[in-house]
Length: 226
Image (tube, rainbow, N blue to C red):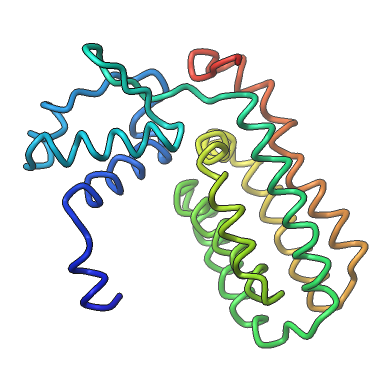
């Protein structure tokens, strides 16, 4: 990061990043109440940057800021979840089609390194680390297709699904299944097996549908039915 970029960062940026990470990693749960005063005291900052961070997270759909009432971590929206999944599938199918039709050999070592780290995170029982590597792999897929801008589209909607992903990955079987998907996807890209890759990706991204019902039963309080 350049010195200019560092200088442009504000305390509000730091507070935003901290709260965003806590929400997406489920250190702050859906429905939790937040106080500007308490957060400011915990982080050793004034209330103004906390207020600015709250507003940004409200715009992201992750907090519900209500005047004269406690700010609340938003529950997971089923409609937003469906919209985000549709967008991600449409974009990544096209990205994968391009990747399988071009020479991606310059990225093969990076794919392999990512998969190796995923295996280590899975074996260590670290779903949070595994989740980060999952997204890094999908970012690499976009880069290998020379469509990195597409990842920004995926990233813009991923906050709606991150918490659900982390809940699903708390089940070791889900990590194993998604890891197997990733290995097969990389193999298909290396061998330019486009149709196989597209089929695997469809199945891969539909796994959230399969676990959604179970998670709703176990954590109904985390969801907003609207």
